[in-house]
Image (cartoon, rainbow, N blue to C red; front, top):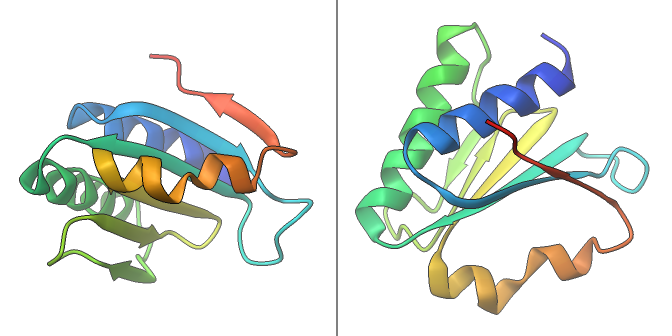
Length: 114
């Protein structure tokens, strides 16, 4: 599975659990760590955790090993490392506070289309 397909998988997994304002950021040219970031948010701790679980499960179903799953217990900002795609799942207030989109404003933004 290439990184673009993995991006689509992450988008779908987030959408399946009703994540809000799902966006992708192409960071291939500015990051040596990954190709894409996916950023989304939810309105409750439980929903943030449900989205992270869904991303992990859908990735594992197609044979993708999840590198790290950080912040799960706190459920304010969960990072799911799929190697070529890193998914950031925020609680609504945390997303506004950290505003990762601002840090990468020069990169290409990719909107999720169902």
